Image (cartoon, rainbow, N blue to C red; front, side, top):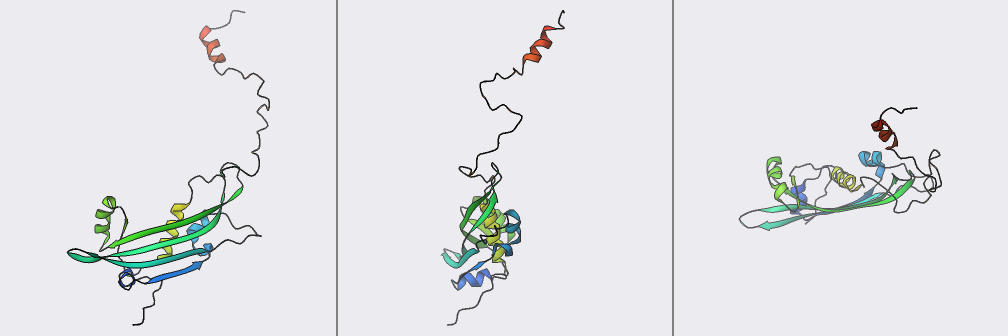
Amino acid sequence: MKQRAFDPLRLDVAAFAADASALEGARAVSEFHRLSESVLAPLPDAPMEPVRWGAQGETRPRRGGAPELWLHLQADTVVQLQCQRCLQAMTVPLAVERSFRFVRDEAEAEAEDPDSDEDVLALSRTLDLFALVEDELILELPLVPRHDVCPQPLPVPQDEPLEEDEPRPNPFAKLAALKRGPSSH
């Protein structure tokens, strides 16, 4: 039996899972518009790594009902982000491995998702697999990207003393003077 060809831009999840089909490939980060807007442009001497992705469909028998439809997704890439401590570029690997269970409609997905250990999505005949890959990679971006150890020492502000031996003025000295009242000079 010849296996069906599936389009990742318009994936029929039910047929994909029923056939236990698999898809994989690689795409440039620039083809994932929201992700590419969230990362730094590649350095001229180091081209951006592609997003390597794969998807596997599965049906699981269920007692007393139709089989469950599953989509297992994996994706990885390496992106450049700006360190929020030193403001230099940093390399961040992103890797995703998730499984999604599909249900009949949005109402059922909304009802089951909070109580479920797995991610529950509504079944559609035309899932954009690349949009799902992009969503998952964006969720993997660190909220505050920082080097463990910044490659260059952080600049010291010019208005602060470099020596710790100098006494610092007491911020409450003016308040204490106000409490004592006007001076009797």
